[in-house]
Structure formats: C-alpha cells, structure tokens
Length: 195
Picture 1 (cartoon, one colour):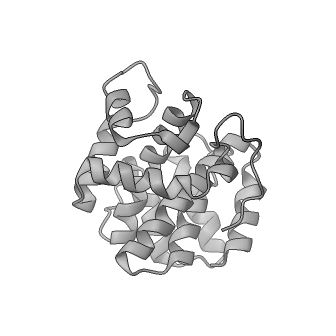
Picture 2: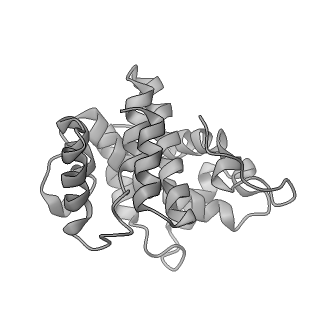
Picture 3: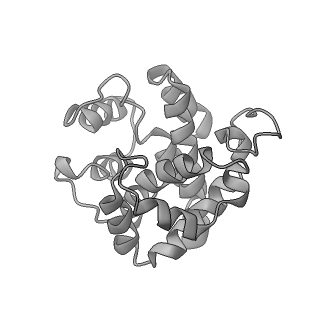
C-alpha cells in the first residue's frame, strides 16, 4: 500500500469533501500512533485513509465496510488491513485482535468528534484542549451521531487513559490542521493533503 494509490482509491469512491477530511484526520492519528508504537507509519496511515472509502457508495451496514473489503481484496490489499477495517464496525463480528485494528477503532469516532469540537471554536483546533472535548462528550445534543461509547471503548481497548488518547489525537490532527480545514478562521484555507 502506498499513499498515492490509497488516496486515489479514496477519491474514486468518495466525492464528499467532509468524508475525505475525516479520512485525513484518521490518517493523521494513525500515523502518530504508528510512530508511538514503532509500527509502519505509511501502512497505518493508509489504513486510516481508506477505512471509510466505501461509505459514500454503501452507507448502510453491513454493506459498509463489507463491500469495501471485497473491493480491497480484488485490488490485492493485505488481509490484515482488511480485517482491521472490518473490525472498526462492531456489527461485522470481526474481532479487533491486532494493535492496528484496535487503533483504527479508537481513532475513528474520536477524530470525527475532535473535528466537530474544533469547528465551533474561533481558534479551531489550535487552542482545543482535552478538557473541552471531555466536556462536549457529556452534551448529548452536540455531534449526536458520534458514539461516545465507542470513543471510551477505543481508549480502553488501547489501554490508554481516555484523556491521554484525546490529547494525543488532538496533537496529531493539529499537525495537519490546514489539510483538515481546522486552522483558525482568520488564517485561511486548507492546503493540499500531503504528509
């Protein structure tokens, strides 16, 4: 898996800018965790980038991510990568029995929630603090489609305290704030998605 072909696959199936930005956010978190855990950053980043590539075409479970896994298999994607992607959806029944799978699950919902928290702040992600994210998690009306239970379970499966996990992902996403459209409002627009 190389990033260019993975990005092209994402763009082939995903036209929505917000879904592409979500993929980029998860990629950033996955790359950061790969570095922390001594894993392959390119592979882990690519897994984050394509974990939802089929969502726009197949938005309902179990089609997503099962149809995507079939497409990835046809393109020669390694089984371990496909299993990690399948495992990020509980209803597939595929266990998250690798660090890669557990990390993808832990970063997916959280990246979306951090994005939502950032978008309502003038300073966006630049000044977002972990305690603000924790506070927003208690507000059930805020970003109601994001599963707080999955965020908590993800940190638990990684065996990392929730606060530490949130802070780690905020920092990872800060590194690509321009790509994610999360720079302070007065700064400007997103740049080309390159890592």
